[in-house]
Length: 459
Image (cartoon, rainbow, N blue to C red; front, side, top):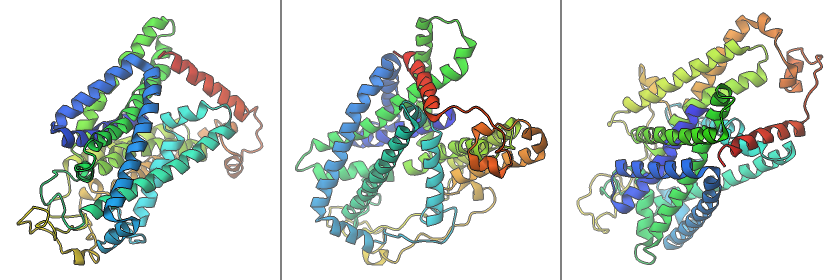
């Protein structure tokens, strides 16, 4: 989990840097170092109190900025109907593509499999999510909180998807990558915001950059604290049982600062892996797949003992690192374009003459991403970022099950029915064993007390 969290925080740090660089003209390297050092300093010094208060302010700014941009952008274009019309005519709306291809991210199979694995793992085994769930007084309230999270995630995803459609509707006849207004496709969001507000509300670009930094710094500060708590509670506390509270607090703050420096390095790695979307699914999805597989082995396969689970996890993480490094240094050739073409029909009218590279807008409706089937090791390196978590998860589970099946007789004597649901115990014929079980509320109270003891280390 620590590896996955470090990778995800690297993405979170890199994301606002692009917007800040476009708005200020600073280099990407300078922005990464500046932002990373600031959040590391205030998190390690301020601890949990700083995280809580900054989260409240940052979330409010993020939501306000997103709503302001969507309202302003939709009104400028002429309404939601016009936004949908331009996207439809430009071939950007493709709802039902059932052609399975693990190298493309525009088919239902890749999207459903990839997002299902990543989001299920994030909200069931990720430390940040679990810590918030066990802080509640009962299982019932924890479930209710997750239902609200599901609603919020669906809402945010719809808003962000519409945001992307809004951006395309604005540049639908003049691709800014062709006019060299931006060097990376990720920078198009900042360019769009600067254009729609430059004449009427020029200060809104600053609000937008603030929104992006709010989302980023909030996640970064929470993540740094979570990793520091994990390392101290699971590893160092047992090695230093008699340490004084003063020194324990100093060690956790030092771990938080050291973690921040590692995250800065992860941000530089993310800079070299395609778009932010691709980097997030490769760096986050790849390592979280084996961890999710480990939990699945424990819940659904009682005959898999510690050896099978350990070998499965190690093999899955090896595959994860292999794919991540391969995707970073062995990219798809420039001659292969796995994106839809864009139009430059109106670039002359917008002050960008002699832009001939592009496709006529009237032809875009019939454009499709070409089929892609790489050879040799590229068949692994060039997998769709959405499909990478599926591979690493499958590698972990299959390896664990195979080793567990070989040593099944030895593992059966160690099965603990109280750790599995009734259905799994019935399937494996161990439902008759009776054990004293903790009630859900007792489990929650114990976990909550453990979490509070961790938090006190930071106060």
